[in-house]
Image 1: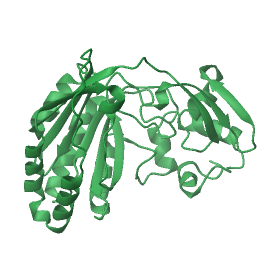
Image 2: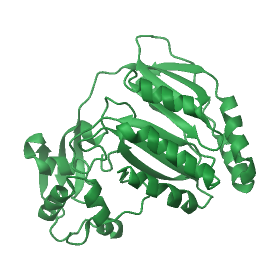
Image 3: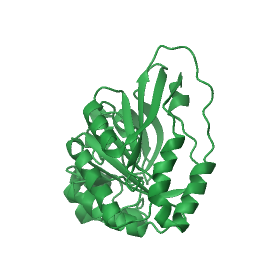
Image 4: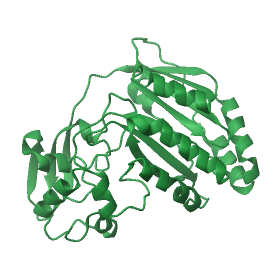
Length: 309
């Protein structure tokens, strides 16, 4: 919750938005039990990036256990964009993984189901992905074809089971990541420009761009504060230099009023963040009240909030 981590679904909020109560230990040792009745202190603590204190208890808004049916298939990239933009409100969860150089995409949807039959266990090996990433890194001229070929290994398939099993994915291939959330209505246009830039600049990246919709909430530093968002997650294989990719893409994400994911790489400081987050100064007021000496601010948080900011 400290970074507004999220899943996907235009009617589903981030984890921060699903917090109903929490217990916050302040730097001086005082413990606060917070709910919505505590106003901005609660709304700040729900997504605090560790800048207010230590959260020792969380009360979540929960639902009874449920089952999901997941469908995964491939489409040409533009068809995937059109499909997801058109159908985003017709599925509980919908997302896709865009391969800009190969101009292909993997689409995934999930719906609650009453089907009592569990699917057989999914193939959970990441060996092929690791191998392809290594080949693409060393032979960039192959990356467009590799992106096209990898989708041939993705069959139109369904997977049914308890939600906690369907949601979970085993990911062992390491990467660096930048994620920004833009206004939901601008998501596809932003993604198109990002993909076009990667192609024009011939940036060697095999990892796909993950594209998701998330509902608005009222947490002060949530990427979804007062607006539904489209999140674009940009990945680069850990052994490759991520700077050429991220340097080319970040200005586009910022031009679309994108807000950076607090738990991922970005280059913004206090001045830029204040322009992007309408409640930034409200958060700062809470932070100064709860931690007037800035004891919770490490070097990175000082860049975000300033020693006394």
